[in-house]
Figure 1 (spheres, rainbow, N blue to C red):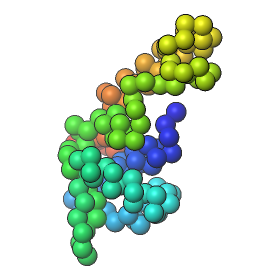
Figure 2 (cartoon, rainbow, N blue to C red):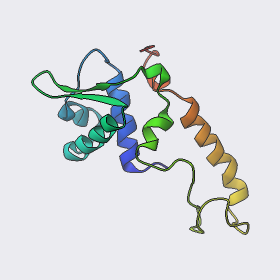
Figure 3 (tube, rainbow, N blue to C red):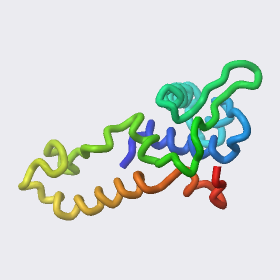
Figure 4 (cartoon, rainbow, N blue to C red):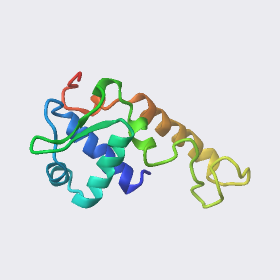
Length: 134
């Protein structure tokens, strides 16, 4: 249900958080998460501008988390690339919940709410191997 951009952002941020003591180069992250290098460079740049990552130039440069993994909710990462407040109707009838005649709404609304809760209450640390507590 996420865009490819948001998915790459999550995967890259999770990978970077695995070793917060070092700066990760774009090509290293791209290889690890199987993402196009140039596309990922733009994504990581957006995350840095949003304050989620720090970017350092030079021979020892790269990207690292700007905050601790245990306080960074997945929704904060996704929000850089997607509007999380309003979902599109599964049947193409505008925004979810705004068309009372939508046959999918009653069944889909609890699932959408559950997904929102997952992204809001799950931190980056929750998805790291053995909860790194970074």
